[in-house]
Image (tube, rainbow, N blue to C red):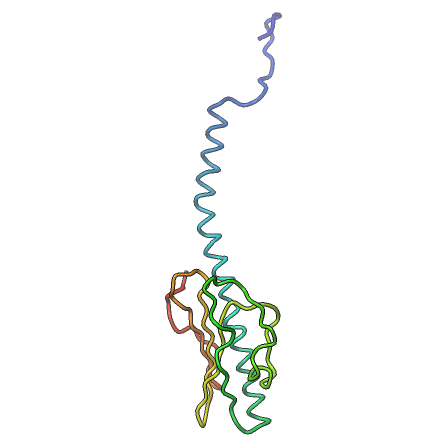
Length: 152
């Protein structure tokens, strides 16, 4: 009230109101941050099935032209930091296969062969838990997730 006895509107917030807002923001952040990290891992791991599928398509095309399957050693070499690395033109076998990813990769890719089929493998561990997520594909099988170690 002012001197004339008229109530004036209150300006600002009380300390209790501010503390309640801070507590609510803290609870929301504690719920959101772990989910955000898990979604980052999923997004990083999503490169593997797409690359395995692309390598599978290139291997089928190579076999149809050359009447043989191409065996490709694992590339790139493993990285203990799990950071995306440059493909750097791949190894000679991937160049002969005619496949190269768009940009950097986190996984390691290879092709093993038999007389009648091939197997494309993609191995990736984005969260440094020493459990690799392994994707595989053959001529007749689309990229398939083989283990549940990195399922969120």
